[in-house]
Amino acid sequence: MPATFTQKLEEHLGTQLLMRTSRSLSLTEAGRDFYESAVRLISDLEAAESRIGSGQASPSGVVRVTAAHAFSRLFVVPKLPLFRERYPKVVVEMLVSERNSNLVEEGIDLAIRNGPLADSSLIARKIGVSSIIAVASTEYLERKGEPRRLSDLDDHDGVIFVSQDGPRPWTFGSRAGQVSYTATASFRSNDGEQLRTAVLAGLGVTQAPRWLFAADIRAGTVRRILRDHEPGKITISAVRPAARRQSSKVAVFVDFLAELLPGHE
Image (cartoon, rainbow, N blue to C red; front, side, top):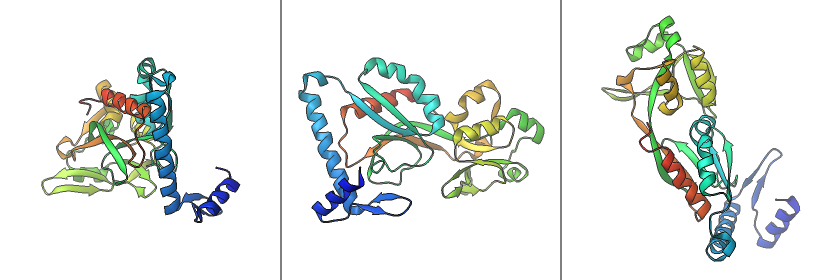
């Protein structure tokens, strides 16, 4: 939004909507409230047009979706021709990122996320589950040996996911409950595709959702290890802002996502 318009709007409302620094802009509490109210009004208008307008009999418009690069490549984009056949007026805009985007501030309709959700301002729908597994390439295991116990990992190289909070430790199950393990890294990345490539190249062991390596395990190039210590399954969810009414275009895309993953682990 142009700066002059925003400033005039702030003067009209008598409150600051944006926190401004030399490097970034972010919404104030009042700005977030105003934005969410405006989005609700626009969503209500779109819903009314969809119900009443003769040219809006089927869902239409752009659905902005964010997902991890690997998940989008493996499970979503290859299936979009089928979605396009059903809903030719809906355009999917895919924004790939491993970070948890701020859906409201970034104007995103939907996010696909793995694991527990910490943000209570989001509405989530379960679209699948995935086991969390430890893997390494067959070539690496033949060269270094296969770890049979958690303590054996001390002699192995780790391919580690790193977030904005730093390297992410692995979680394993044990008789005493879940334990955290920090591996010695040979490679680190904030992108699942890079981790998969590193594992296939023989750089070491990693822990990841099973879906990332399912095809490689079937092909025999990657082996699942330490199965007795797997921490369990995580939920794969489609999430959207709670303050925003779900439009028909978003609803049909969420339904489509749920069809892609039934029973997937």
